Image 1 (cartoon, rainbow, N blue to C red):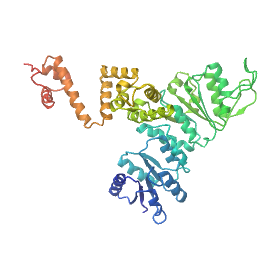
Image 2 (tube, helix red, strand yellow; image 1 turned 90 degrees about the vertical axis):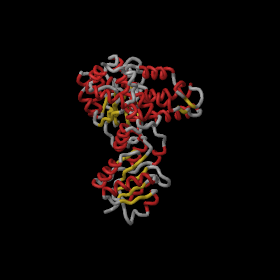
Image 3 (tube, rainbow, N blue to C red; image 1 turned 180 degrees about the vertical axis):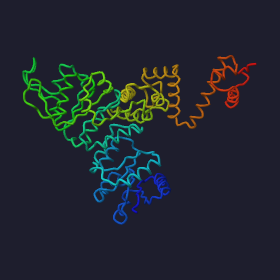
Image 4 (cartoon, helix red, strand yellow; image 1 turned 90 degrees about the horizontal axis):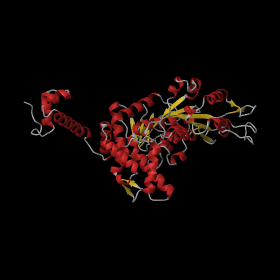
Length: 471
């Protein structure tokens, strides 16, 4: 049996995978660098390769290109500690079998290796190393974002219509641009249109153009967005707000590949990939008769859902550093640095505006915050006040969320045990205060036995003298 190759300059990563494969009885060979492995390509070629993406010497992408040129059916699993879209897309475009962000679950890694051994196949063309060198425009280490990265990677050679859903500010246009930039249409135009931002009377002309004299003020022929995007991608944002008559016209274009300019009689061909986006529930709008069901199905070929920032709070420190560096570069100043308390404060906020709101906050900090190190008191006033309201809110779940986030950001340990003890202690103290120290009554209200209550008082080290025993 041919071996599984493990390629990583990190000795600890190699050790973990080696132990897991040994336990599973899978034959393997390990290399500290991609260059070291190439001499074994002819003598003992791999059955599967699991490789880091960034290493001294040849990168995992470079190695994969060399391997695919000689053995195109060998599956390659790319590992990376850099949780960004560019790494995922580069991996999939290079023909990767799967993309595995670090840190990873070892059992999951072994499962991927077994799948790769069973399903040896070539996934796509070689990656462009120029793409990996660009600054990533979408970041995220959360599992939900990794799924988005994988989807973009898998769609990189597809021209299917895509529907992107997600709250406002989650980055739907960024994903649409990434889908275009990593598609066969990348050399052609990317045209974006927010259908909710244009008055209904002008939207038809914006989309399809108009002939001279089509209406008052139409002094010359004008090409619409479909013609401007010819051969490329047309991104229709907030598609859920499109008027009903234009929904019908859009459906005809998607069905027939042709349209007429306003006031025109000659059909125009449309070789355009459509990517639509909405923050609304289109299924609900279809049920209410506000959106055509047939158009919905035309658009909903591939659906990508972008998570809100509150669903991936672990990405807030990463995004904050990125936006601070970006703002500093744009303004030509030194980048600000947030204290751990400031990061914890931001991480606990609701941030209904999602990534866009966080970027605006970072820009404000770059311009307005005094000094290079930024603490909670230096954050925008509305951000500080929101945090203070959260800290004093009667919504205990939100207050608990803020506390947990702060502890995680500070790197504290044994959080579950500590918070559980605090929770039980406050619960018992307040119940006994409410009953005037009558333990039988407090236990009944808490839904536990009196003996359990007495034991908890002792375990938690509560002041028994201050908790008056009922007679």
